Image (tube, rainbow over all chains, first blue to last red):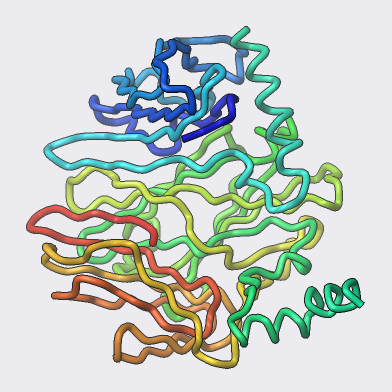
Length: 130
Length: 256
């Protein structure tokens, strides 16, 4: 259960299998208030600074999205608006599955400035979705 | 008096004492890796029909808005002998590298590799970059099953691309570190546990009563059958395997 609100930022191409047709994003949110509130998750082209797709999601719910493989590109990142959760990536082909989560962006830094650097990046992407 | 105790506790000797007494342990030595690019010990395997795909981010492009940075990927065999080095000069936000027998000059085996990021532009001294990355493993025609990096292992200073440093993970004199893997191992045909030594020291470890030794920087694969729980006792403060579990024609790979 999370008490905080915020934005999850994660790449599409890190774990999805772009060569197959069946890729799914599972986003589980558990918010402290026992309500189901709608919020949006955006697929953002950070190179060309534009939103390429958006999905409606619910709080306190395991959201399950089918991902078009055209969205699996190095420059396309997923950003949630206002709610946190764990993005899990599921791919399926010939009865084989791949299922893994991505790292939060601050794990790219072991130094004390990690949250500052991530905040700068998130602010930049947040400006695109707004 | 309190501040003196605190100072001693956080000193090098204090850390050694705490780790060996298994009291308030300090798994990683972050002091030595300031202004560095840190890499996990990533597993590659091309044995038994496996191929590996490696996905990594251009950290400088994504977080610092710097174009033209480059990455260096160094491959080792399981005995820690260097077998290949690749320089990647043109990167996208996310990148991938296929590691198969063709890429490794017909080697069918397993080993480790390390990635380091560099830029010609000035980066503040405080930065320690760590590309945790993602590994996908495919056996035969299966899709790539992904797992993320697991153990800080080696580093290069951002202004010194020559020397590869190690010993980010601390060790103890005594074999007093216990780690129980949170998985029920029953119901599978077999498991393969890949342990990479993240240190410059030889490691001793045991799984139940069976003892193993692992030389500096080396990799070992341990096959396990008919066990429900696994506990690792070692002299390393963060010593966790990548696990392949098999059932009929399927496999699962995950970190522990």
